[in-house]
Amino acid sequence: MTGAGMITIVDIALLTMLCFTAIAIMVLRHLFAVAALTGAFSLLSAGLLVALDAVDVAFTEAAVGAGISTVLMLGTLALTQRREHRPPRFSLTALLVVIATGGALIYATSDMPAYGDPNAPALKHVVPFYIEGSQNDIGVPNIVTSILASYRGYDTLGEVAVIFTAGIGVMFLLGLRREDEDDEGATRRGPGRPPDAPKPGGTKS
Amino acid sequence: MFIGATAALLVAMALTLIRAFAGPTLFDRVLAANSFGTKTVLLIGVLGFLTDRPEFLDIALLYALVNFIGTIAVLKFFRYRNLGLSNTEAADREEID
Image (cartoon, rainbow over all chains, first blue to last red; front, side):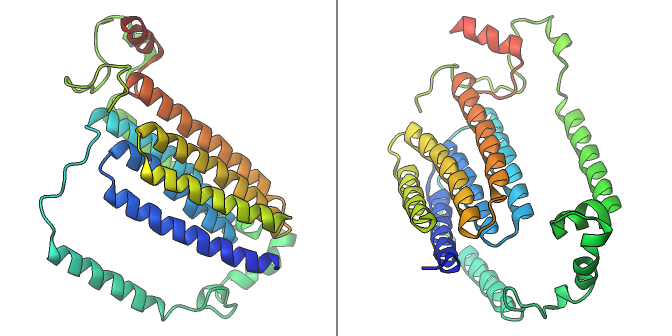
């Protein structure tokens, strides 16, 4: 068997596991397990993106999806309760709306160019310029990196500024305290800890 | 050889995933999700060699780091039921225990 054939098998196996993980996330009611499984879901999709050669997207998916999101979900679980309530009842309307939307989206993919098609409209615009010039202009072996870091350098800088500003705003909203303000109030509880939170160390659930 | 390694890793991933679904306890699930992350790191490393591009190893390293952060968060959550504690508060909790 060749390496390319093996990649197809890897794709199929990863997609199958992705489906089962998604179903398990829906079915499970224990939110801690769900948080762990969403981490696994992100890692799976990052593996798929690596198999699709989109290494930079896989990087982002792993860092944001598996890393930060898991931590944020656990932080949320610390503030809320760890069990999901049963949904009140089965809703046929919602199911129909979801099926119709999904069907429309799948129908729309039939208009898209085939995977890896070199004549796809997205690859006709500025991509030939990047592919020809990247080696001489920038000198970075990876073309995606040269586009992100050099051709669109100002764009990336602006994005970083926006994300940084958003981060500062969120920190102000959350009112994170500084370490040196913690001295008065030794008996004070943790920020936002609900009064009926379980005792620390009690890991049974 | 890499093909065999990939197949073995896929089987191992499926097995850990089954354990994560089935439980039965919470710790089974957390451990399964954690070792699943390790399997993903290994799979990406092997995929690089399978397609003759060993530079994928760098990404596998990043995944290992991400996994580590996730493990720290899970352990802190188990220990203190909170992620936002400062060092002094965490120490206070420790004495209460």
